[in-house]
Length: 273
Image 1 (tube, rainbow, N blue to C red):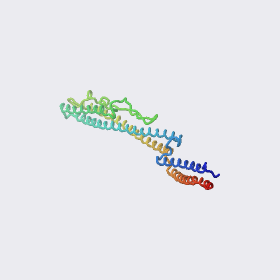
Image 2: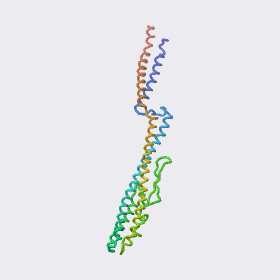
Image 3: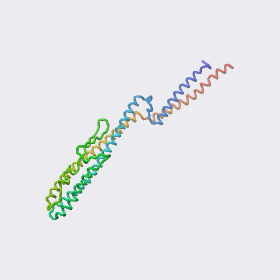
Image 4: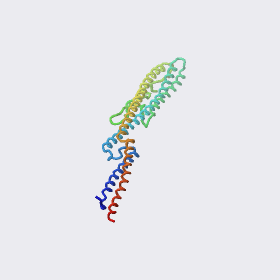
């Protein structure tokens, strides 16, 4: 029906053009953001899954940082124990020197003075070596829990490498004397101290290895979860570009047809002349 009051063709063309522009806007939004889901209305269920996965990924990544921080802490402690190792070796060397009968009592006293200084240095290192105010060398009963997420953690136990724990405290061990008897006893005690220190140092070493393995697993887990999150959330650029091109063509056609529809009432006016 030819009419001038209601231009149904123009209304229809405008409705289709509006739909095309909405789709065009959505494609541009997705391509510019790189995300298929930019709001809940895009995919409510997908958005919920994505946000949970993002939270899990963030926790895992923080867990990897926790593991690396723990490794740094253990490396600090192990490095301090390397210095303690050097002190014990020097103490054993001094005890061996004092054990022989070719030195005087005065000379053994000089050796003992250095021996005592090495003991004091061991206690100083064990008492002052810290990482973020945490000391792991002056107590065998302390435990540090390294957390990697919900219901996942590793407990790293402290060690005691003070002279009293090693059995070479200055109150009971000496290499002075008129003969080498005290030095021979000290030699045996220092050997035992080195064995105890080696055991404590080894415990830090295998915990570092375990934390490194944990960190590797967490990185793989985070990578796989990021891939899953990407499949849910990220836009498929090729598909979206095809949709954008199709929508652009429809929008251009809609503009052209709307212009034609707006000219249709002119045909009715020609009949009124």
